[in-house]
Every structure is written in structure tokens, then in C-alpha cells.
Image 1: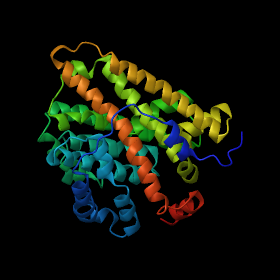
Image 2: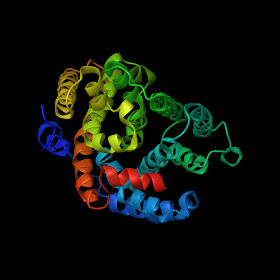
Image 3: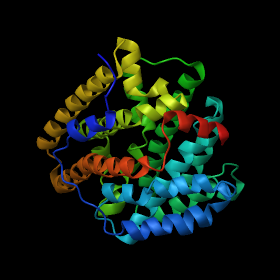
Length: 337
């Protein structure tokens, strides 16, 4: 099958469909302004002081607008730490995507220790220490220490996923499809956000609900669905930057010897299977007694992450298509940084 005329972004628009509502937080513009002026060009200016291009790119990523689709009903105060986390994921991914796998362990240990209040940000050696410390202080206004610990465990999972990706990139080897889905489930960094629905709703659910297999499965499926969508969206960029070893589409292509279009369609099939399971589980949740309404609500919020991600990311892709170069130019540009 020929790849000529095949446009992955058209496939995303027409075939990746979500039967969930799409809402957007009305404070997106305000928080985007804070993100750009108080954070990127303010508190965190020194990180990229000599690189205005990177700062410009970060502003164009519109992190507050992404967060606004995932947390549509949060008040300004509750929305702020979520937007700070969204910016942190952007900075952290970029800072370490070319690192040696062993370097990640120190970053991971210090990041988790700061979030858990076990390490003073001033004593830390990582560049994002202050950002994580501010995040901890803001979260503590709304959720208890045990929720922060659960959140930091999910950040830990993200770092383990990141480390695994770097191993594959360094060795220029592909995982199996199953291994890749498992590692992307962690490295996509959605788990931490799913914990923060508590910040938005003000309802802290007990541990037994967080540990319930159905709730854990729904979160895993949400991570898979965002990943399957993401892989098709970023496949061209990943080809340009040598990040193909952990893009599920490229892994499918490698394992099954398929064309790019066939691999994207297989990714879509896997996506639709998981979507079907998510919808079925959502429709038949177990009885959680007094927590039933809060759990139904949480799963409803999880579902809006999926429709919201499609909504904002396809807009951003179009919005940034004019700004960002094609694969060959991108590679050249990256080599100059």
C-alpha cells in the first residue's frame, strides 16, 4: 500500500471519534497570560534566557488551553497548579529527551522528593526544582498530603517510562507492540493529571476506590487512548527526531512490516478496541455506595480528557503548522540548537 497522499492528520480528524462532551474552562485565557508572562518570561525566564525561540515555542503550545479542556470546571485558584503542572511536563520532556537513561534517575529522585516535601528546592540540583516546589505548595491548599503522595507516584511512573524510552532510543532498538503500549501508558504523563480531578471537584476519594481494578483499568485505557491518538499525530515529527523507537505506529510498522498508512490503521483499531472497553466500563460501574456519584463524576471527567485532547490538539496542529517547519527543516533546526 502506497503512502503517497496519506495524511495522518486527516485520519485523526475523521476516524478518531469520542462519544463524550467537550467543555472548556473559561479561565483559559487568563491562565495562558500568567503562563506566558509570569512563568515563561518571569519565574522560569533564566531556563531559556538566551533562547527566545524555545520560549516562543512554549507560548505557542498553549498549555493553559490544553489544561482547560481537561479541567473545564476548576476555579481560577484550583486551575493554576494544573496549568503549572502542564508547563512542567513541557519543560521536563524537552530538558531530558536527549539525555542518557542513567541521568534520569537523579532527576526522578529529586523531583519526587520535592513533591513529597522531603527535599528543599534550594538544596536540589535540578533546574525545575522551584517549579515543583511551587506546585506542591499550591496543591496542598486543596488536597491532603496522601493525595500528593499518590500524585507523586504517578510522576514517578512517568519518569520510569521516560527512562525506558531513552534506553530504546540509545540502543536504536524497538520494543514489542505490547511493551511499547505499556511504556507509553506511563510516559504520556496523563496519570498525574487524572489524580488531580480531586483539585477540581474538591472531593477526595478513599484509597479503596483508587485501588479498585475497574478504576485502575479506566485510567489505563484513558492513557492508551490519548497515546494512540498522539502517535498518529506525532509520527512525522518522531521520524525527524529519531524518536521512532517508542512511537506505537512505528513499532507496529517494524513488527509487522506494514506501510505507514497500514500501521496507522492498526493503531486506530487498537484505539477503537480500548474505547469500546472504556465506554462499556463507564456504563456499568460497580456499586461504590456513598461514593457512587463522586466516582461516576470522576469517570465523566476522565472521558472529557479524551474528547478535549482531540479538540485542542488538532486545533494546535493546524495553528502551529505555519509556524513549525516540516520534518527535514525540523531536523536541521534541532541540530542547530
